[in-house]
Image 1 (cartoon, rainbow, N blue to C red):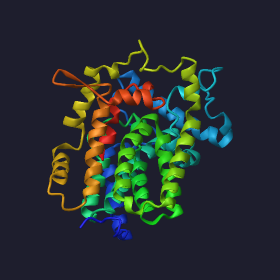
Image 2: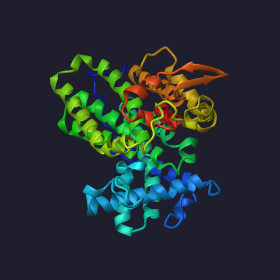
Image 3: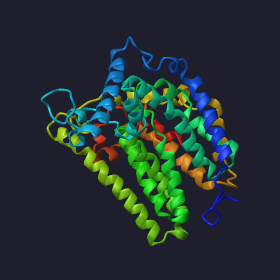
Length: 377
């Protein structure tokens, strides 16, 4: 039988968790080699001849070093970064990466080396992603299957080829948010609700793209989870979810005020407006990275075969996680195509256009193809 609300799984033994962490860490060393041999002086990018990639590396390192300095010295001046002087709110022109600061700051404070700190961040993101998905899957299934789920969540070509785009790398908080939601709905412990709010906040503060990925993945998951647990949805559980969600939305709104102010001044474009264009939103160009991901940069033939085997009937066990995986895969893929879905020369309508009108800030997204991350569940 499926582990439903009436029967709660036991946590995995510490030895199993330690073994999974050791295996994922060893895989990360191999995955990033030779970066671990030179991570005090070198960065992980592969297109040095392509100036925008090089610029992204410098921008990301500067932003996180600036965050760390400002939060310790003058947090009220966080968005008045040391760039484009005397312009104010200059950090808001791009990502602030605040969700990464807990992983970046300790190394930066200890060494004073931002290159080492960002390489350390890249490194730990892999075992953290794998271990968080392992923990979520382990709640529903056995250790070997959970370990495989963690592997495919963290180690696939898209995550290797986007090392320069740190705003796409840190998806380790999202499985934890789902796990903590399961624990809250099961036991209604205040600690789980507080940790859930923290995990969601750090995930949404990691980057604007990951904030929207969180909406696309966590939103459908939560709807399915509430339906599954509907027999035990008492006042405490609903209020706890409301408080956690309200806290995250409030904090995100506060941290987005500088972006909205720059948008009001006309300094940040809105691609939902008449005349504003982005090549990443043109159906032909938007579809290219999506098909590339599905054919070359995703989990590969083995991963797709395992996913297909998991969702095909008969659904004797684990209906809930299978449904979550199938729904988020469809939603993430559809969103990645952008406003129009181009398939074999035919352009189809997409619900993406509704998000542009209904979700604050969504109209400023330039590269919807990055939403394929939501399909990875």
